[in-house]
Length: 231
Image 1 (tube, rainbow, N blue to C red):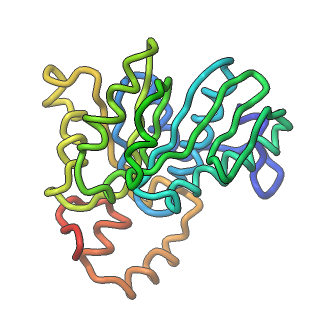
Image 2: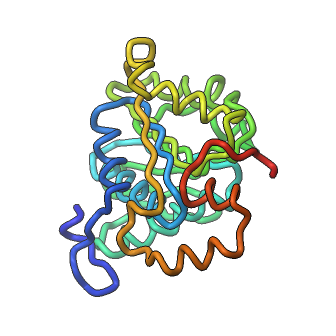
């Protein structure tokens, strides 16, 4: 699929270290916690992975976010990718937050703020965007986790920057670390700082560092878990 996609220079898209980490993580784990710094392309990579899954007939994909505003980042990428590849759709509705391809695969945007929207359907692949912004994991345990039980070989991807060690996502991240492997064999996780994207200019990052607190910079660019939510 990457060979068919073009960057702004008209060249085939090349994933960076973080984006390939996401691909490999999902290939080897059912639940993948992807912690990445700002501007590392995690939303774009998630959209490409969603579309790759949608190319399989009759596949159900969901993009879950703290609110609909945050989920539209991946939606916009999906719309652009579908147009770029010339894929035909049965339905594409921003109002319903739903895209159905001609092969009857579909992707829905869902919001944790509207938990009723999370239940009632089964999914092959669920992406949780800006996962650390969500206060607790009730939405996952009670709503999302059961939707992954309908089909075989389902996957769930959590993407986010950190929000401190008191956040549930830190616990999920630890599930994917080697020392927890025997306890949570289906889980995997990794961290990718801003350096994983070679397109980011170090001079620009250092300029941003001047305008941020040390703690905030460590969280947003270095993916440090030491900072606190609501700081």
